[in-house]
Amino acid sequence: MTNKDILDTALRQSAIDLGCKPEDFLRTDSVVAASRADPRARKYLELPFSCNLVSYGNNVVASVGEAYRDLVSAYIGRFPPEHCFETPNLHVLDDALQKVGQRICFMAEYFLPDLSSLKSIRCWEYELRLLGPADFGPLYTDQWSNALCEKRKELDVLGVGAYDGETLVGFAACSADCEDMWQIGVDVLPEYRREGIASALTSRLAQEILERGKVPFYCAAWCNVRSVRNALRSGFRPAWVEMTARSIAHVEKMNAGEKV
Image (cartoon, rainbow, N blue to C red):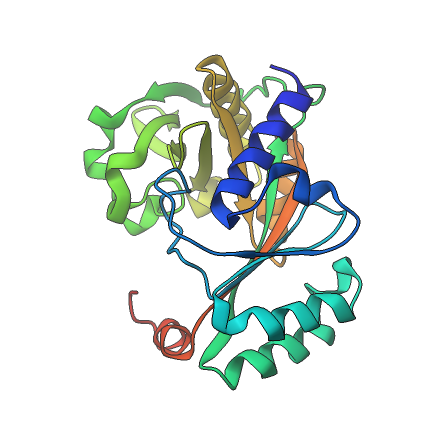
């Protein structure tokens, strides 16, 4: 597998998720596609979208419900691609969406491994152990909620744990979110942070995923500097950005701390 193979896999998956063509992300003009359900899409996506914007750096591809096509088309046609994902321009889209019962809800940056940078990172004081679904049962707790997802535990397929003696102090795991790409999440106990454990776990798990013929990917909020730094230290590089709208009721429930 090469870096081009990895990128091509991601482009194909994004095209499935958004209902467009892989080459649409490489165009210089922006694209609006009709969102539709697809069994091949990433499992955690709730399709069809009302509005979902993606950029691999060249343009914006918007996947939309028909009721939102005109307002989203006007927005991505008004601003340069890189400014469509930031304030103050972002307020224009959010204001328009609120009039039709939607709000911007999720904003994230996605990373892919750079094979020239991905390498084993030693974790000198702690033993790394490869874990599988049979080991995950007692780990579905808030402590390891970035690594594992109890709501979709059937997708959790592989993990690497860091142990201080017999105590699990760091844990990275991946979910088979779609056929060809597995997403990595990682947690480290607070008292063990800043010792290189997260990057040792992430890089090891990425290599294990590649050995199984799948593409690892990593997601972080733009403001989560600690997570972004871990991605970079682990041999990942920014690949695409994504922004998703959800109903106003959904956003209000999340802000109230309700599980949705």
